[in-house]
Length: 157
Image 1 (cartoon, rainbow, N blue to C red):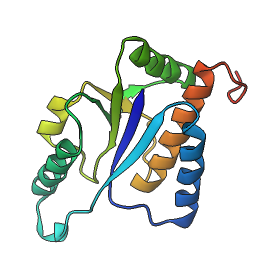
Image 2 (image 1 turned 60 degrees about the horizontal axis):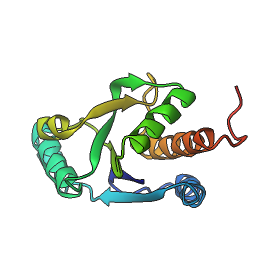
Image 3 (image 1 turned 45 degrees about the vertical axis):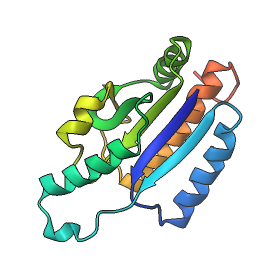
Image 4 (image 1 turned 180 degrees about the horizontal axis):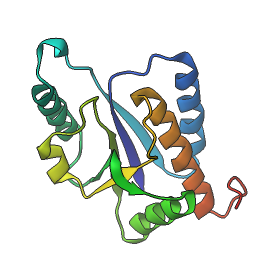
């Protein structure tokens, strides 16, 4: 299965870049993994929130293959334990899903078009994280899920 993480804007904090690189290497042993970075919207300060969401949404949809299942990372989504998230990922693979795209939206969330295209919403926590740190948190949880699926001793109960 291929898993893609779609994000808005580049990661500029060195420690986050290093962490992301580490988990990209680790994930390569379990699945095809790719990060797609959508450039920040230019002149966004002169736009309303809804216009900015719409422009980001257009770019998100343009960067997503039609055959890929779209899952939005959203604070109002379903919260999973690490084991339940692993089961969620495993069920996708067993059901024959070949590609999943997880999306971290911009500061104002997702356009209605992106929400209607999505098959689900996942919350990593009730806490609010910066858009950059949530990338690293998601990748660690995805790696953890893969080790749980394989029965490897990374996760402890």
